[in-house]
Length: 269
Image (cartoon, rainbow, N blue to C red; front, top):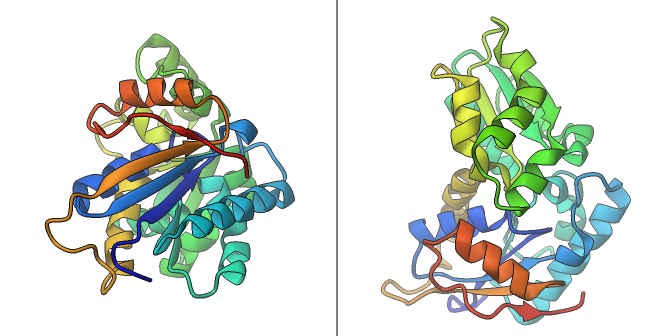
C-alpha cells in the first residue's frame, strides 16, 4: 500500500475517536479516515452474525476509499468479526482493539486478576478471556457488561453524579470486595471518556488500561515500513452513516484536541 494512503478506522459511533485521538498524538503525520456507523449503532446488543455483516460492510467501504491499514475501533466488532474481515482482505494490515487491550492488561496486572468493562456482545464472545489467556495463562478475567456507559458517552455525560451512580451499579460489587483485582480494562472505545469516574470507583490500587492507547502503540508496530513521511501534515476525515451534524457537534465537545473536525460526510454502506 502507498505510504501516503490514510489509516482506516471504524466504530459504531463516536467512541472510536478515542483511538483516532491516540493515533494523532503518537503519529501526527498519518492521515486518518474514520467511519462512524451511527445508523446501526449500538453494536453491543446485536448478534455476532449481524455485527460481522456490519463490520465487513464498513471494512469494504473504507478499503474502497483506499486505506493502507484498518483499525477496528469497536470492541464488539473486534471480538466477533476480525477473522471475517481478515478473510475478506487477506493482504490488508488489520488490528482490533481487543487484542491491543489484552496485551495492555497483561502488562499492567501484577496479580493476574483483571476486570474488563465492556458491551454485552464483547462479554458474550469471551474474546478478552481468550486473548489474555494466549498471552498469560492462569489469569482470572471477569468481564462485566456495562451497556449504559455507551449511551452516557454518546450524550456527552462523561463525569458527575449520574456517571458515578451507573458505574457503581455495574462495578462496585467487584471493587468493594477484597478480591485482589488490580486492573480494569476499558473494553469499549467509549469508556475512556468515563475514565476519571471509573478510576475513582476502582481505587488507587487498580490500573486502568485504555484500549485506545494500546491500539495506537500496536498500530505503530504494524505500520513499520508503511509510515507516512516524517513531517507530513496528517489529518482526520470523518464519515457517518447518519446524523453527521450531531456527530460533529458531539465530537468537537468531547475531543477538543482534534481540531480537524469540520464537515462530516454522510455515506450509506
